[in-house]
Length: 391
Image (cartoon, rainbow, N blue to C red; front, side, top):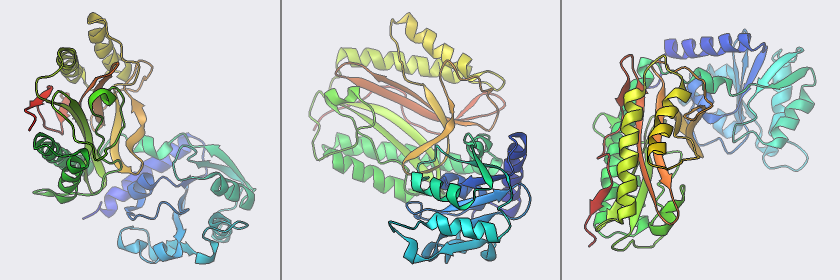
């Protein structure tokens, strides 16, 4: 079951209200997460040019490759007559582009009037050629940066979305247990990743799994001083620690989770760092309340680290929700000292106390939903350095 017609109508209305406040007459949406949010569309077609045009008034128009448009009605709630497919002859051509065709269709449907049209320059799948094709094909438009407009509309989740986030959190917790067990069983890093991916795809009772936007990340040993490393066929040995960062995914909603596992007795430096990170993370969770400014919450963390003469230059977390490769973040809230966003109930955040030192590192994180009373934990794993005997 996807979002109801009422849910989608409310999302579109909030998007248009923000467009109006931004002085936009239309919006070109290419981010697959935003396409999903506004239409329900879900398929692995985002590697090809595709867009949703949202006029300030009137029905949106969804344009994609013909072979994908033919079945888009199976997930998108957009009427079939508003889903258009560009011909296969335009795929990977040197002197023609699918958005040349899209511009012609937008003109034929009456969307070529002069006006300020927002677009998503930070979206991963808006290529330079795509932008130039729209610019060339619709010279009447004044194309302006929409500043992740739909992403900001997505920031506060509806009750329907929060239930999906809870399901994603349960899957993340199960995947983390599977990864820890595989690591303790002496598996190679790719075996650990396989166990995690099986749990991610399988899901849990009441919440089927889905593919995540990012593969399991497994920095190991000395390389754990660097985030975002993936996996290889190397087998961790006694005395090494492995940081596991993953996400549970349920109907495209993501709940990330990170923990560090030591095989055998941990390095005292790592054990001490993990205690500091866990204590600081709990303080942040205790201080996460509606009405507070994000920067003030980050200040709790910064002051905690200062008492231990430690600095963390990277942000402490970010907003989460719908995700497609290559990212599960929303590109809106960043938990750092200059973010003045006011925290509201319904926001979902990945708070990651990732500490990357010289030659070692520790990751502890939680996905949370903000409630009227504080932070609801979506994920469940021991909030500590996890120690397992090496086989």
